[in-house]
Length: 405
Image (cartoon, helix red, strand yellow):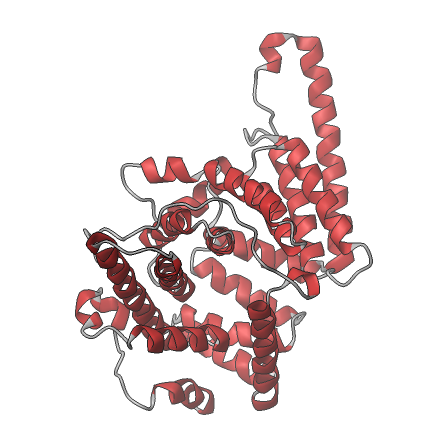
């Protein structure tokens, strides 16, 4: 696997007793999250003032023509931040995700092109009603056919995908809309929780529904209850993934998502964030290691890997007792692991021309505190990670130059 040194055992902290996380402010956001949102809004405003949507989309199409889909995605995302409901931007972004193999994200964007907000909720609700009618007809048919028919899988037009799963997924989609597009609507929180509870009624062990409930509970500062839902979600898929003989590729996992309990890649990044918030650092490391095995060119995964190592190190240092030599060595190993991950994250950030100021700023702050970037990191990583990367003061100007030509 490129970008990750094989054979190196990463230090992991022992699990702690459950503790409540502090959290306050609008929608349960922490001060760090509120600051991040403010910086993101500032970055969006700066982009809007500097470039028009037409200019950004022109660069998007140029990158797509030259098959540079990662770069195309960056420009397209910036255009979407300026005009979130621009149909051409959504169409291009959906195509880019499809080319990158993220079919689930491509489908979500395609639906968003057609329906947004309350209209999307209405369509999902109508779809659920149709599915529930199918469930009722199936129940009546199996009741008349006896135990043998009852044991057969629910089918939809010849497919063996259970209808109940589709109902659960639909309710999860409704909950996500109330989390995002309709978050400012009256009773949005109540509607969100109601949708998640209905999803769990039809599939009580669905990992994504359980994780959505955890996210909702964290946002309302019910941290202990949220942690319980989160661990139920992770326990539904992580043990099986860890026990697999060979780690699957990201494409394999995405293709099998509808038939398995393994959440898609982006959802598992959220899993790692929630685990870090819940101070379940060891489990977060397990999730992040799996993500790196599948795709080692995602800046956020490298960044979170460094962040969790840093938090483990700080946790050890806060323990008010004399450290043994072994514990001091472990603490130092965590420090070096954090530096290594964050160094890789920063280099990849530059290579992919990312545009997430808060993450870059946090990475740089952590690296300063940890003693700077790891020397010789380029030799340890996959050469492809640093392909065409030349350290110079002009790196930050490359994207500007691309826009000007």
